Image (cartoon, rainbow, N blue to C red; front, side, top):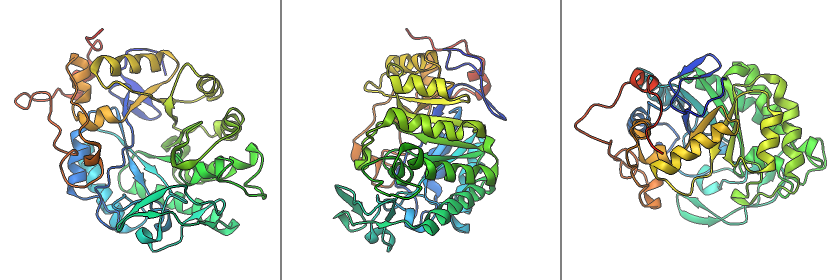
Length: 379
């Protein structure tokens, strides 16, 4: 990619020509049907945000045991595939492009939700309660995955990726972040194995690498992204060797020629960020840390992310609250505030599809008009 700090300038992602450099980050919202199938409300939600350069669909489980919470989307049955196809068809008709994130919760799961005992690299339970259809429950001790489990799970990710492409997605994002199964293999406090998948960093990266390779073999590496969150402690994971762990992972994957690497909470001022940017030869999506959700702050963060070497910028909460975020940033207009956090996960339209556009009386700009802009008109 040609380097620029103009995040509204056109961009490319492999075979895709994008209207600008802004990506909608995957945002789990618990609006699927009970079996994980996307419904009509999700069609509306994603179509409203189709002016994002790329939409990364929310975390979808590749098998039943991987489900984290109630009403999380999935992609391992014909019904799931058909539900997602309705979403992608509507987004494509609105001019948008979509990838789908594939996520296995590992120990972040509960039998009250799935009817199954969670699996994980080691029998180390989540150190907190977990939300289930029966309310918050104490976490259970997960079953340590066998070699057969590991191979079967990698195959499930590959099958889910094939379903995603059949459902109309341009590609998939393998989720190895935020304390879920793949990240549990990376982190030393959740991976206490002594076989080829545990111990030194070079062995703990093996499962993430094998899953990513299996997905790339299934649908083509140019359709596969990988999401990582170095140093994250979400869901109780702890990395004691972050600065060795991620170079080992990238060394294993950098020759695959993946579509992108997606770095969560990317901070250009850290050694980890600079090392990852130096080590990764392909497209890097930076998901910046945002403590201020004003137009000026979001604009500044996007420009800084590109200036620090990211190729695309992923935004979560700004897209959550502003279906017309791109237009607002182009005009320097105020952003909607994100409403009560409770509304993020309760289901229904409130706090999901009812965020207002900038001017309900005026038509939103076309994607062509966004491409043609000279950039945001804010300081």
